[in-house]
Image: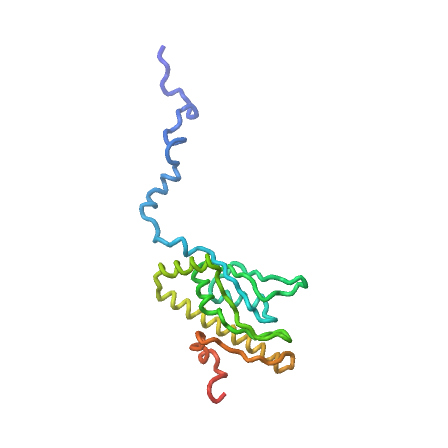
Amino acid sequence: MQPTPNRLGLGLRPPLPSYGQGPSMSALAQQPQMLHPPAFVPPQQHKQVTLFVGSISGGITDSFLNQLLSACGPVKSFKRLITPANKPQGFGFAEFEDPDSALRAMALLNSVELPALEDGCVNKKLLIKADEKTKAFLDAYQAQRMKTDADDQAHKSAQEKVVALLNEINRTSQEASSNGLLDKEKYVIPPHLHDLQEATCPRRSAGS
């Protein structure tokens, strides 16, 4: 008597050849997309960069520093060292989410003078610096990167935000001095920010 050919249940059928051998179904499904990859983005563009932030004037808060640093681009973290007496020290470390933001911070914030907001302290010029390894990476990154109009716009926008924040902290210092809370210190905006000073400081125009 001949066996009936279609008596086997579905569960007894031999496995399909693609299971357990060769690429998975999901990998096969993605193959057409791999033929047209997205525009190439250099991996360095997504590299996080840590900069040293030093020479911070007395009384300048972490909140203000975060605003100043974030004006240059996204900041993942800003960590400031604390003295044993639980007082913020005059330096810390800022981790930017991309090299472009770190480069803008070095260009716009290094040597910016911040007013002392703590009695008995003097104005200091910020020090924004990369260590040797980071500086070598940033130099190489800058050398291979093509500058675009979008980069110029981002730099200009960051510059405007920085000047606005500097003017705000300057007013705070002046108000404290006027109220006799602080010895008045001269506030200086560095030369590389002067081109925006008049546009953002109408009070300083001639005749004011």
